Length: 234
Length: 234
DNA sequence: GCAACTTCAAGAGCACCGCTCTCTCGTTTT
DNA sequence: AAAACGAGAGAGCGGTGCTCTTGAAGTTGC
Image (cartoon, rainbow over all chains, first blue to last red; front, side, top):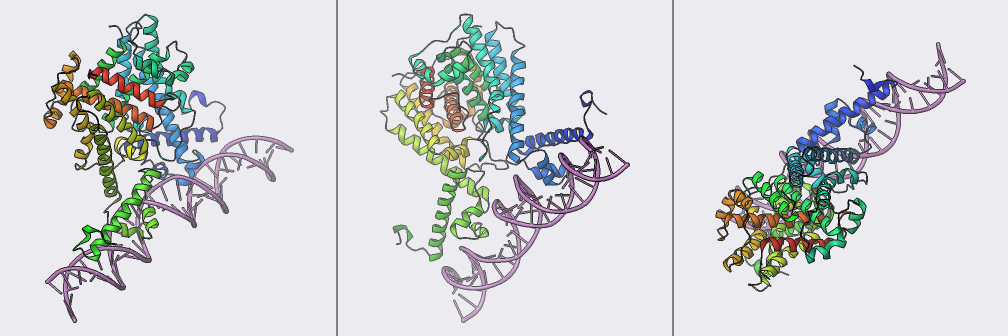
């Protein structure tokens, strides 16, 4: 029953790894069922046949467990979007952007509670550690990649005075990414990214209740609008 | 010490009204300090010098108290936006829209926890009663009003194929509002509204942490973008 | 091989939560 | 004046995160 990677490990190490994995599996399931606010260490322990205090051998606090789940969520969303975008022909910028946008919504709808965990109201008293920023940036990097590739191919969105005025607001981010994307185009990219999340979160959080009936085609509309503004070639 | 509206009321009625008002005042403050998830009936009771069970004379449950606060928040945001928009010259459609958008963000930043309460991740196990929909609609009605006034004056946004495809998604809403706004323009309006909330919630929820430095000018950019798309005349 | 050390889980306990029940006592109504 | 009603108190239930102590089991060094 021992896997290949178990060589040279003491029974204690093995036991610890398995217990921690089982704990996370249950935690993930609970998170999907009751959401972050309803996630209870005691309930997880109960289901594992453990006493609540034993869980603290594995996670020093509820927040630490939450942090692990947040990191997982960011990375899962990130790789979901990445693998959707990588399938599209590199010069099909429109297709790459569309695939990414659709993948974002798809993951959010399939993982509503986890989406809420990372993009919803922050859990009070909980401060996300800095480790998460790299994982959180993955989706953004995909979109920025599409835009900078399109720019290199000579396709740029039209520049407006307001766009130039707002450029300094994202200048630092622009230098961090160093993706060869000028600030004003990055600003437009950030706005597009925000725009997609605005629709997704309204759908996931139920704000469209009796407003938008066919949320899927509405999302398609938004993608179309964003693409038009970004001026990506067909 | 009795006000004008107290005539003909028994001391019990007066006492009840005052206690309920004090209770709500403290609840509002706590909400602003610790957020919805941290709002505790016991803490409120403690501060009032009451025993926790006594609070249930006024609110049958924590959720009922939350519902009251949610309704208040919707209405306060609604009147905040309304009063900002009403100050602008009626034919200045761009100005009316801008004033509304700025008022939305202003209120959200001044009332972060209350904004999270109504536009953030839904409180688990809590279902918003139908009473709230009217209050929730107020902001949307302001924006729709600007758009339909502009349309009546002959200013319409450009129609795209995707816009027509998505029109049925908001057809029902269009008939409810009956604002003389054709579905495809309403769809664009809903998208604009979503777009503004996307930026605001990202700012309020801290998603722009080290990304967008000057969130105010970034918001101005978004307003400019939205206005361009809506084709409102200067 | 056994002693010393480390790790795990259990259990009791603390302070908090929402909520329910009963009981008392003062107000209101009849 | 008696009956009905209402507000608050208090005890209690089951739940939460988290801490501390204690005993058992695994691991390591002499």
